[in-house]
Length: 297
Image (cartoon, rainbow, N blue to C red; front, top):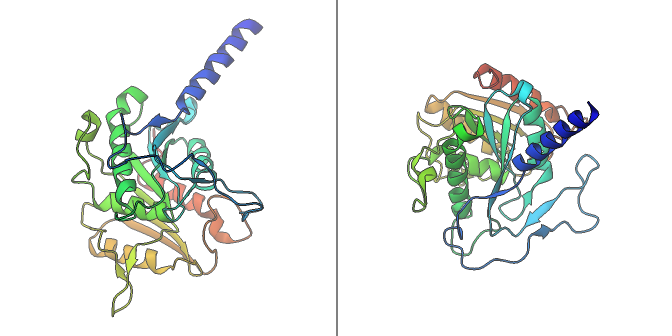
């Protein structure tokens, strides 16, 4: 009996490990890449800024983007999937704070998670979101294309991004009709439109004008923009106007949206709990996902 149970545990562990193995986003070199920028490493300098008393992995540079699937436990798996994009100012990726820790939370809520390691830092002569948008379109297309094979619901695939990752999911959610690269396989022939979008302390959503902050020109908000959820603090160093302006554009386009603003909270807290009420945002996000029917089996 022990041998059988031990074997079952080993098989389960092997399956879990297989799910969490990074897969290349591109069959060869990513579009426009000419040479690797150097070995990937944690760029945090000792002692490094802590978040909620814990260190943060600041990964960079990234030349070979990947996606890692983390499945929710079978007993509570809803079939829904969230593709996660960590932030880092398009310079690095906060891979644990805004990546693996987020996938743990989503899995606990019955949601599968696809964590994307997209290209950073900004490539010379290109928009800061240029190569990352290619990676984002490719990732969502891959998840939807492989949904049947992976046991996922192709009609419940959303995106979540933090800071610069919040900008990236906003660009993706408003620029999904046309790929920004030449198709490489069947995954590029299915829709890369997210079914829902979560923007957590998003950055770069505004542009300056004589009339004050306006919507960044790359954000083409229409009535077909996915339902959106936003969280931000008034003392956020990147500016609460990012959420305010984007929410206003969503409202004008009659896109279902929910925004939560807090007087204090700062920036870059991920899911790590502190004494500040804003760190309770995952409960609000779960309630919103439930209202959309995302957390139903």
